[in-house]
Every structure is written in structure tokens, then in C-alpha cells.
Image (cartoon, rainbow, N blue to C red; front, side):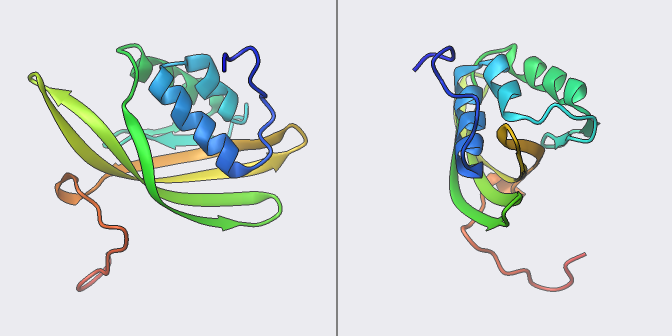
Length: 147
């Protein structure tokens, strides 16, 4: 389905989140931006990156990320908390990384937050961190102090 015929009103946080990841795989900056709330308080942290605040900063960082082409990414192990106006998900992203001509599957642990607006659900937070040793289990139990 082309972007021109795709509904921009997301009926659920799952639909908004799927549109976000689909747009990353399609390297479609405008579609990625459509998933986000246009607000000064949205926040994005890419793995190993700094805290980006505000729609313009988030959009700019996503445009830079996609300037080199699509991101081969899929999500597994989705956990969600949802209220009538707020949803927070935690996913394990499986990302294909190409380095020196070799392909490697890396796990990234991401938290996404969505708010319900009159125009449907929109993303307000994406915080991603590389999994230890590049792999993440569905559920992990910490040993020893957490912090």
C-alpha cells in the first residue's frame, strides 16, 4: 500500500508502532515522522546516542539514520502496558547490521511510548539500547544489584 493511500490516523498503539517499524524498513522518512506526535516534548534515544528532545530533533535524527537506506528490523517479544490514553511497549528489536561486508543479527532492547490524541495514537518516546553481547532473551532475571 502506498503512503498516499495509507491511513495516517492510527487506531491503536500497535498500529502506530507497526507503521514506525515498517517505515524504517522502507527508509520512508515521511512515514516515520507520521508516527510521531509533533510536539516539543517527544524524546528519542538511539543505541549509544544522546537524548534528542523535540519533534524537529527526532525527525532530523531519523532522516540521518535513513539517509544510508532501509533499516532491516523486526520486533519480537512485545510487552505492553496500556491505559485509555497512554501505552508503553517494550520490544526486542532484531536488527541486521552489515560491517566489513558481513551481516550480523543484533538485538536491541527498545521502549516505545504512545499517547492517544484526537488524531489517533502517536509515538512520544523511543528509547533503544544495545542488548548485552548483542543478544537478548525473552525474559531475563537480574543477578545481584540492579543498579
